Image (cartoon, rainbow, N blue to C red; front, side, top):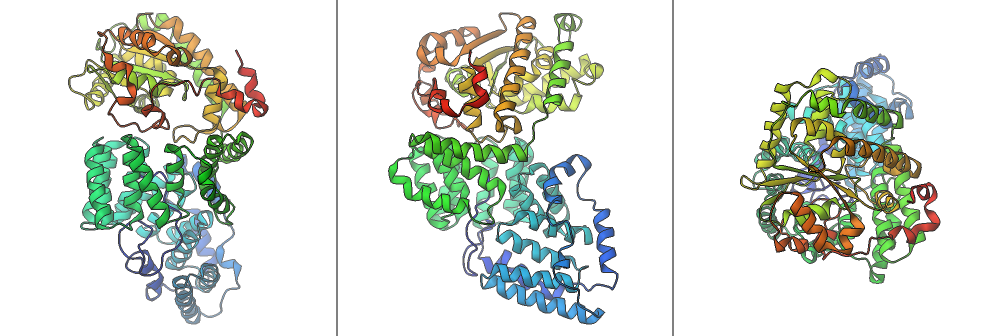
Length: 637
């Protein structure tokens, strides 16, 4: 599903609503503009009451409040101070209602800046009315001013904690600000309060799918589809259920029918484009992305999706010019600017304009670094703990733990080191199923606190973990002798995995360190946090990764651990592929020589590369960016 909501222009009243409901704007989000009759009245001590309400704001647990630091910096002074309060109790309520009606009329007319000013006057007149803050917040959203929207919506919820639509709208703005965990919490509260709020169910499903919580995502999509039955949005969410079940061909068929019935629905067109790209049907996907851009010329989702799967040429210069103009729009959010910079960097890289490309990659990473700071000390602390605990003696003392099952094959290493290619080669074998990037071990490591609490894992828990994981793998194939898990970061949890599955196999993918880190720096990845946004942090992270892998080499038996060099794999794919299949304990199959013909869906940033014959274009790519490498040069072998 969509990784980011379209930033399309505000529709007309008879246009399709950009929330994806499939309804006309005037019958959907536009109705909020007519809510003036429901505005509650305030009292003379409204300023103190609002402060008190904000002080006990109950929306999020402490662990998620950290994600709202960026929001807390937004207009912390009460918004109603923009204009002087209006005198008189009843007069103030009437004045607020009048300002609300005028603000709604201005919004319908497309005069959003004037509407915001007028709605701020409404809030000044009656600062205890949550509906006023809600209307102001959604108007900020229409201007893509999500920081201010989040601040206003928080105030609405502080005054009325059961305001379902405000929780939903807050979730939208938090997602736009890159605070996905907090957005999930807000959306959960919205659907708890209003179980028939289809849009909230659908957006929650999208976020859970991105977080690889596929079972819960399916349920969200089902509820959204049921709540929006016989609408395009409902059909898109029905396809979401299939996508979360890895039934991409069925989802594509359903989405084609939805687009045929409603050809101007942006949400359906982009969803179809994304599914087609996962399936490797790039020409068809490109056609749908281009169609989406005709419907919404400023749609970031469509632009970034198109750039990922298309080789940009000089004929695309007009599109680049248009995106550059949108990039500098006054109210383009930080997350949107980050995605646009990454997409523009890739476009200029395709055009061999490397100085322009690195300028955009630098700008994107500046934002990524701010959104997701990297804590070096914490990362080193966890690695120190793993190295200290998981020594040969640790496993010798727990030889009865876990199960002797040989199904799991872990393809791991630094991201962008060739893990997707290795999995495509192996899963081309008829006895090997590809599981993709599974979040299982990250979540289990967090759950059992395996670094901080040495006694957290006992034999019973190890066996429960084994049963749960095998159940996940069998969801990909009930008969395959091997199932791959290519979550690169599993290198962090090899100790826990080895304890649970002493017969598991580990394939460590390696690539030239500068090529690896430069590729990370130039790629927008959902699973990559702040360490990739700074050259110095990348150098630190890479060196720590090498230190940890050096340790695992002393722990893992040679028949359970193998290393493959990306450069060797692309230079002699036949010999290296034979080596990989032999390591898995299986007989050779010629299909492994043609990974580009593998029909399984590819959901990673390498989805275009995975459909090409094995090539060497990415070897020594770093030489093109040599003048701008900075501290990455320290990683040269």
